[in-house]
Image (tube, rainbow, N blue to C red; front, side, top):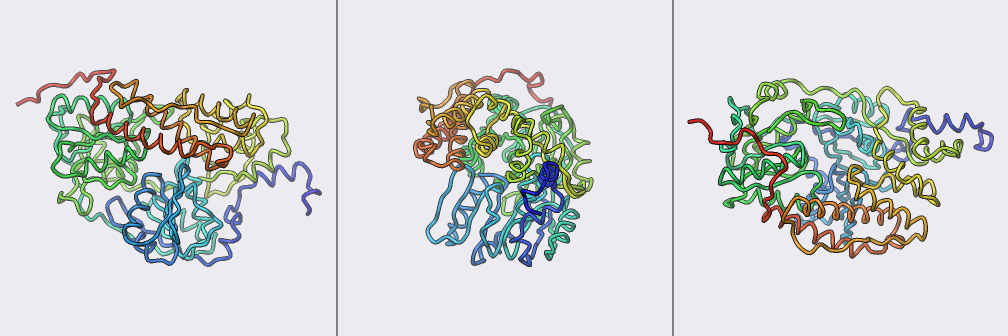
Length: 511
């Protein structure tokens, strides 16, 4: 039936039909792909083996969950003599004659053809927010051989998907190289029981700086710090500092941002708490996440014979239980409508705001039992803010709603609104930022550096998606971004500001 002959209801139902998503990628379906699933826990060598196939191939793409990990693979592969380019939402580095690419998962092309593709942390397919990016990669990659790396929580779903796509599936099971041992005792709530090589795990930025101050005040240790809001360059610098032998920065205080990527020489994982705010409520950290975090201890090639795990004061029984129980099997993986589906759906509802359009499409969608619709709260918050910006096409509005912004950061949101207004008025968007004068000496200044870097990262992302003609200050933004990342590293090394709350149980441990 021709598109003109379709009724409005037919168009709406066709746009909302997300069943059989494997049919969205006919070029991939025309290939007989070989899927190799490297299945095992952290520190088992699964990614190493997949990357060996990637490097040995005539052409390849590595799909990373994080910018930082894509950058790390880019450097490592080029260091071995294999020419490899880099593609993330914020930057592209083209290496002459490169037939290999390291990219973030959202940036991988389903049009380019590769001999080998590697999809890392494939269990993220079940992530409620980002899962659709991994699903898209598995369904759409045009590669003769696809290597998946992850735990076995999504193995059953992947078997079903490969049956639907007609791809051959081979599963390699892995075990840890070194045992993971839960210590008999906690640290009893005393920072003086911290030892060299410890990673103290906390789940908020505020707690991280409180713990860092306490350790550096009551012990001889110096702390490296890693959490999600830090720029990748700063996280990498902190990781390298922690990994260096014979220096005073021998303790890591970090969030679960370390649980993925970043090879770290960790002797023992110390959970400060196993309670975490999940965005809606405070709850116990899921067992799968506990396993991944604890599994970072005792990496292959480290000086430590095995990995250790314990807790700071409480939760030791819960930690033991999490590590003993089998991984919960994912029943479904993430999916999200394509822009083309959204555009088709929007043609039937011209009166709806973008936010209401998203809600109506997701409410109307029909999906198979294998999938769920990913959450899109950030998109909706940005869409609400941009409602008063006129002159944006549907595609442009969609692009701005995908921009990497912390919607809880009002200053960053204000800059995004300014970018959208400038784009709608003149298609010429300036940075609107000045370089800070120096490193931070207090928490307010440090937060300001973080926000400036976030805004620059957002500007670079928008320049990639809307073109440098519209966002012309890319070079200046890159330079300022690098300089601010350096300032953040200096601030962490030199600054020692007081946290807002003090611990009640700091003191001398009992004899």
